[in-house]
Image 1 (cartoon, one colour):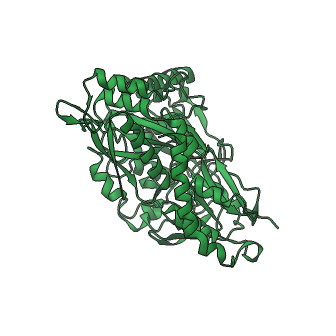
Image 2 (spheres, rainbow, N blue to C red):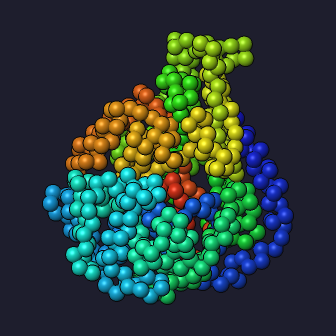
Image 3 (cartoon, helix red, strand yellow):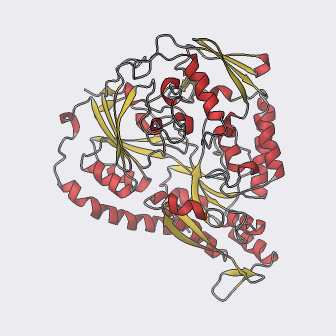
Length: 531
């Protein structure tokens, strides 16, 4: 799909959006601007978590609102102390991390926070009975030891360079979470933590409401009432923002652009590691064919997607690592080369039929591509990918559905998926690519198996030597260029439109998983009124 045709599609979508929002634009902006109390904020997010328990993976990248980790990130994504009083002391050749805990911290129910809660949290996550899909990220951890109430020691199996990044994991209270079923107990939806906010209500599919934690060790937030409105449909989110129902929202680029002339709102762009890709399930006779995968990798016009779908708010993606990251392997960019894609397929025996779709040994080059209903960015990426694939003689039949409908089909059908973590390449790539995680929920959705990639993933996580780690990740990226596990399309900047009632709002470099704890509200507890 060309940049021009993508822009035409976007223009059509904009026309529809204008019609949807006309009534809202005509109505008076009740409650807008300075008339709203500055101790309250309502923001629109696209997704809600499945659970609010850190033991099951909630908040693993930090900024969970309800909880704190031992460490956290500042605006520049540098680690700083949170529940720890200082950064860890690292000894034993990088295999021992000692944390001194911050004194006087209590959970929101008034109970004291101690080393017992830290040991409980990590031991529970690593327990084989705990349904935490990200526990592979803690593979390096051997044991967690309580020295005294304010000292915790982590013993690693091997030096693991990014281990301190893993200690942004939120800490759960042993006195509550330890007294119930970790996977199904009430703590999963009614959590208690040490963070700046207390969850007061979770109406699933509608909103989460929070109030300031009166026991918060960092001081009482000025925004005392925070509501996260869960609005999966992008157009509806934009409409509610325009009507004044929301103080801020995440929006796709074409909808964010409709607020460009609104002088009472500001648009903030967050750089991200968030990518959009197409899974290539190995069990499917079409997407499992290496030549087809390589042809699709050459057929897609990534720059046209950045220009047309993202309006320039992003960059072409050639793998999980953005091209401007120091971890990116230079020279692994793939050109948009539809002619070469056609030749690869011809040489491999995939011949075009009368309708332009190829076939080989009776197998038609056709597969289903799913995207999440209501997600305009995924929809537009899926349609652009299908258009480019069709020019090469490959049919991608685009369908939409909920994750409940999509997940059972992922073994055979392709998915317009996403991922990405800025903290360390291990956090995303191991879960995305290692063959041991094939078919494990949303890990390794393509069920990719490449021995070189497996070996290098293990090498990279088992050394603290930055040169050796860079070499391993370079090798992985070169393997993906030669034997694609997924077709990576774009890295997406996140755009947020926010009412001008607060000053000095910032964003962090964001992961794929964004919502409650990302965007300008990553530090809502520190927001200051503009006047």
